[in-house]
Image (cartoon, rainbow, N blue to C red; front, top):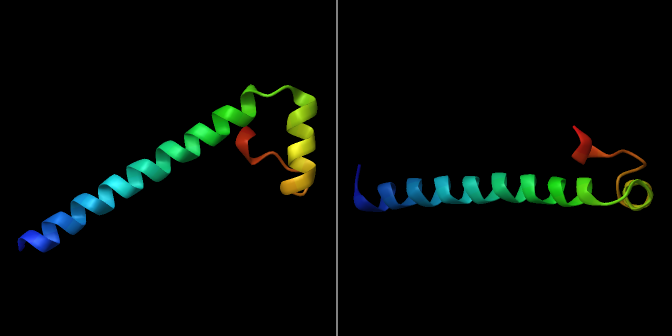
Length: 54
């Protein structure tokens, strides 16, 4: 494996880790809101569903 391939693999791992962390962060943020605000966001953006509760 050449250096470019190794660097690409490292970048891919970093990006995946960042995406995973971002997913956790937005779910935690929405869960921290009161139920009324969560319901409003769910209705406006998620068709009434709350994917952060899963």
